[in-house]
Length: 271
Image (cartoon, rainbow, N blue to C red):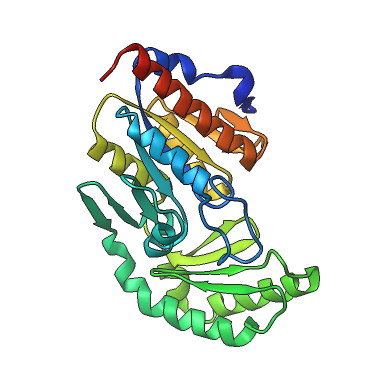
C-alpha cells in the first residue's frame, strides 16, 4: 500500500494531545540536513538544533539521531544535548546511560581496511567520487560523478569484492542514495538499533521515525511493528512507511509540529 501524505492524515497530533510520550528517531542526511555532493559539508543548522532540544525539553520525549555516519562524526555535526546517537547504521550507540558497540564488527575490520586501500588506489582519482572512511566501514560516494565514471566504478568495485572469498563472507554492501558502503556482515541494522534503544527508554513511548533512504526501511519496519508512526522523506510507493512528507523542508515542518503539540499539552497539564 502506498504511503499517505502526512499532513493530510496528521496521525500524531491526537496521540500527543491524549498524553502520549514520543520516542523520536530521525535520520541525519536528507532529513535533518539537505544532502550535499560532498559528505564533509553538512552540519546541523542552529534552528534545527534548537528545535530538537525544545522537543527534548518538553519532558515527554526522547530523541535519537540515527545515521550511517560514524558516531564521532555524527555527534560533531549534530550536537544536541540529551539526545541518543546511533552511528554506523546502529552498530555504535551512545546516549543517556547507554553505550553500545556491536561485537560483530571485529572480524571484518582488517578485511575492510585492505579493501578500502585497494579501492582508493583503483578509483580514488576518479572525478566526482569521494571515499569516506568510517570507524567500521567505508563509503564510496558518486553523486557528482558522470555516468561513464559510475560505470567504471561499479565494475571496479565488483572485481575487488570478488577477488577474495573472505570479502563476500565477512562484508556486505549497503546501497544508499548515490553511495555504496562496505560494512561488516552482521544481523544488525537501524531497525535493530532502534528497538535496542526503545528497551532502554522504557514503555509508554510512541515510536516516531523519519528517514529518506533505503537504509531507513529497517527502521520503518521495526518501529511500525511496535505500533509506531513511520514517515518517509520524499514520496515513494516502495516503502514500509505508512506516511510521507514531500522533502527535507517538510520533515523540519513535521518536527516543528511535534514540538508545538508537546508544548501545547504542557500548557494544559503542567509537569
